[in-house]
Image (cartoon, rainbow, N blue to C red; front, side, top):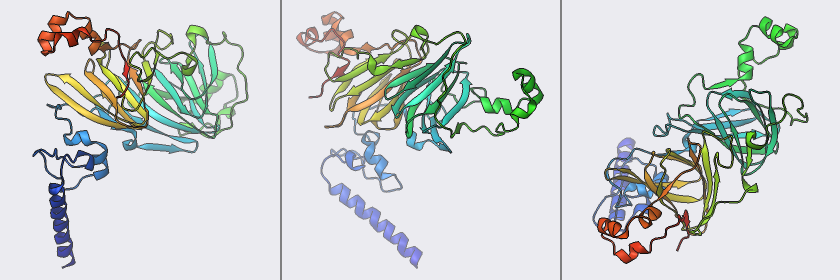
Amino acid sequence: MKLQAFAASLLFSSASLGAVIRRAEGPQFTNGQPIDGKGKGAPILGGTNHQVDIENPDNLGQQSTDNGVVPNLKWRFSDSKTRIFNGGWVREQVVQDLPQSHDIAAAQQHLKKGAIRELHWHRVAEWGFVYDGRVLVSAVDENGKYQVDELGFGDIWYFPKGQAHTIQGLDEENEYLLVFDDGDFDKVGTTFNLDDWVAHTPKSVLAKNFGVPESAFEKVPDKNPYILNSTTSTQNVTGGNGELIGNSSYVYKTFQHPSEPVPGGGGLFYKIDSTNFPISTTIASTFVVLEPGGLRELHWHPTAEEWLYFHEGEGRATVFIGNSNARTFDFSAGDTAVFPDNSGHYIENTSKDTNLTWIEIYKADRVADISLTQWLALTPADVVSATLKLPIDIVENLKKEKQVLIKGT
């Protein structure tokens, strides 16, 4: 009887909810319901994550211009499996999480003070952006040159494939974004950790290689620690063939350089690629701050797909992939996304009082985009007018300079 009563109460609750929603006036997307207020849609009565529905009104059909089948282009780091260690944690987004991200995989990684992301190298390039705390990065290249540098908020490193490196936390808590130029980052043969290699090499060979007794290796961990506790380094590095500096430097101090011009006046735009960070030949990036209500103008990228990490704020983007297929996505802090190669899109800050901050990543040597407005402004006005059925005087007054970030109204 209790089970029957429970089932009856569920049916009553669903019916009551449906009745309340049907009586509500106007669109109900922001209330987490697929109802446009004009006769289309109906309430969700079955199982759903209502909070996720509220945070993603465009998944409920809010944009009438969306059309066709566009694959999922969004992944939340909150949906990633977090691996925890004595000295911190890591959570990844790889191609198995976001199948449309062919070029890029990424991770958030956290180190406590003194904790070390153990010495390692990759078959792919690694790019890092510090967004909290300070870290010490150390690397050595194939010519015996080295770099040891302290990085803080906004600072970037780039280690070409195969370059030996490590990272250590300097503040009490330290966190950064990692990016790799291969979507299938977790496959065997991508990452090579020092402890793992030494533990699987005969001690007699190790002794001969390093010129020390075999007993020196008795305490080498038999399991790869990945992140381990330690104390902050106090040792200086000297010798070898000198330091990696100038165009060979693995480090770029973003906010020690001027931002790019933003004619639209809607925020800040930093470009970091091989034109100003010469070592970074396979990963190009931007750091973007868009003011409330602002718009990253309609554009596309001719050289690569675009991968994004949203760090702060709330926004949305409609992605057009051709043949009348378009889909709008809602984004908030901790979300990642990928926009297919050459797909048309914009990014809009939907907040009235908070900046939208994100990072754009391209598997390319430079950042390249084509502005829709600039294209039309530099095409014969009568051709554009005839194509879009726009008054020719409007076309003639389109801005011929990229606006990049357009100020909200």
